[in-house]
Image 1 (cartoon, protein in one colour):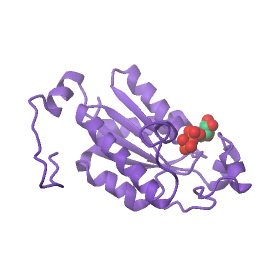
Image 2 (spheres, protein in one colour):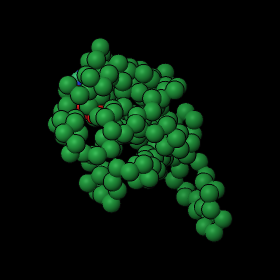
Image 3 (cartoon, rainbow, N blue to C red):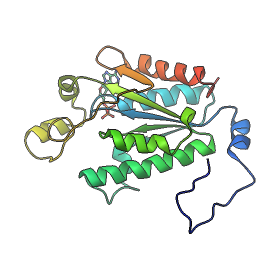
Length: 202
Ligand code: ADP
């Protein structure tokens, strides 16, 4: 996908293209964008689906919100502007990975609809699968795998999604998971089935 956002820089074409890499790998690249509250299950499901695909010979990658904030996005906080830049950068990385033919999972809360839509808009339509990892706030808060809800309730974390910062539900996600009813394996299988239906993996 050629980008034309700037007139002062010329796009350079390279001889090895995405289709060459995909032929070599035997599957297509795609972004599986998991959005949902902290503790809803994004990282667990991304990891489970990635393992299942890896075992069947698919090249995968997981971009995890917390991990990326240790490196590429270590300069960003949790204000709406920083959250927007956080998602913009990760959307660009996801796009690059898709172009290499990698099935990449993005596990980011990504609470704002317009930020997710921006990440979608820079990829081809068939390359972006938005997954709403849905769990009621009470369930996510009870799980509290990192103890963050307890800290947020104690006022130690300002702007915590679901408590003191908004979460905008996806209006038309490709997949809607209900993790209070489905276990991680079932959720991962549903994602992989969608990848098969779209001809991304076999
Ligand atoms: P997130 O990445 O959305 O913050 P995590 O994957 O880190 O969430 O944590 C989710 C927690 O909920 C984990 O402790 C996981 O074992 C648990 N869990 C229970 N049921 C599910 C499910 N169906 N899908 C994913 N995680 C689940």
